[in-house]
Amino acid sequence: METLKPAALQKGDMIGVLSTSCWLEETDLTVAQNFLKEEGYQAFHHPQALARLNQSAGSAQEKTDAFHDLFSNPDMKMVMGARGGNRAITMLDKIDFDLIRKNPKILIGYSDMTALLNGLYTKCGLITFHGPLYRELPTHKNSQHMIDMVSGKVENIELPGSEILKAGNAEGKLFGGNLSSFQALIGTELLPDLDGAILFLEDVGDHLSRYDRMFGHLRVSGILGKISGLVTGQFTDVKDSENRPFGFTLKDVIEEHTAGLNIPVLMNAPFGHGEDLPTFPIGCRAQLDGAELTLLESPVA
Image (cartoon, rainbow, N blue to C red; front, side, top):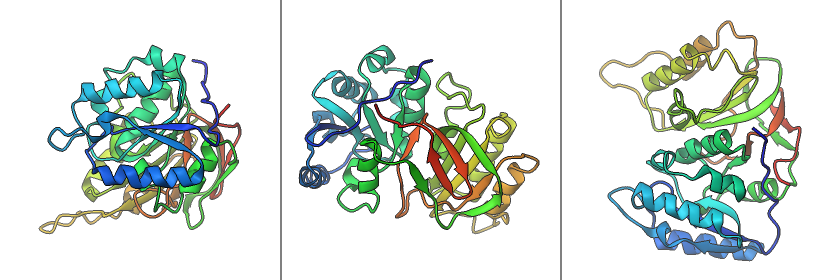
């Protein structure tokens, strides 16, 4: 499938906002809107952005309708998820992918949006962006990096402090994001073609034993044997059993499941649910050299 590059963000452009996952407060929206206004951009909050249904920001159909509204509106140059949480994946069997292909735009978010970001590339060929969510913009240290990335001003993503478990170079398309959300795509037609890909993964708030199971799934499904490089980021708020500790560290887990693979493997790269989240363009060709990613093409047109 032909790769689609969204148009680069320009000063004065309108950014459309919806809630793909959990609900949020109206003040979260207004503070972020003020931030973007100061940066020279406009923001439109779709009415669905404040919907509530249990923990979710409305039903799956409400979210999908809002998604279609924003992508079909020519005034919207970029679409952002308002916050993370759960249930973005419920949209994927309802999205009109032909509509998205005919109206390519910048789509950005992370965490629970990982399934959407990768799924849209798979079905539409659209480069998407794994980066800060809308409500985080006023305080996130990497907000400017995100703006620069979607404006076409970034060529390299430096990952200082990464621990190199296996040295080497890799070249391929970037895919990944939140480990648990990405793993949920395995066995579906929404999983990207990972042959020769550089896979980046992070997660938050889960148990070591479950991370072991997730990485094990990536291995036994053949995914880790296909990729050209693996970059694991910050796994924050990691949990363990009090009665019978798991015993294996996250490093043990990653080393075991990448044993025998002749690919570069990085751990503790500065991206995830903590303070650091540089924006990664999903589906964009890149080169991994040590602790630096060099984009081999612009992710925007």
